[in-house]
Length: 186
Ligand SMILES: Cc1cc2nc3c(=O)[nH]c(=O)nc-3n(C[C@H](O)[C@H](O)[C@H](O)COP(=O)(O)O)c2cc1C
Image (cartoon, rainbow, N blue to C red; front, side, top):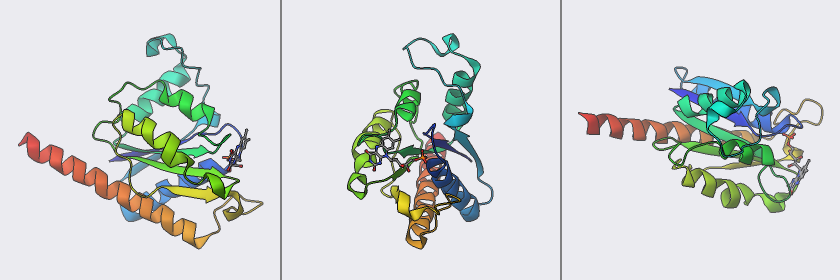
């Protein structure tokens, strides 16, 4: 199984660190799971213009393909203006309506205000559900205070536990979907 993590920021390190930690937790739970972090800072994803994918540059094509080819995906976003980042929403705009059918789509968010901990639930979950992704009940909000000020590593034990739970639930749900699909094929 391949788990892709998407870090939806072009600015700091916190979101990519949080997504990285979900991938690391998944590998720890099951070492057969292949993981890859797509850090959007490393790709020139174009603005979505509603045209076929072949009209876009290689990076856009590459990122969309990688996400579509994954068995399941965890999306990371910083909270921007009480919503998800524009760069993540722009990426999501490229996917067809059934992009995540039979796939688990997890959520992890970072932010400076605790008041916004439900933003991913209200703004990202509906988009992923529209794309037919199964969103786990565990989603993780990591306040900036839970990162080491110098290294941006997550230093809060409670958050690390939630990240572990998220990875666990994602694997459990994806395996359940896969085994149901396999048994209905027989
Ligand atoms: C343009 C902008 C808008 C932001 N708006 C919010 C916000 O509404 N609520 C919040 O909790 N944090 C907000 N933040 C803080 C970021 O979500 C937070 O610092 C996050 O950890 C940054 O992630 P990064 O290091 O991966 O870029 C904002 C930051 C920026 C740059």
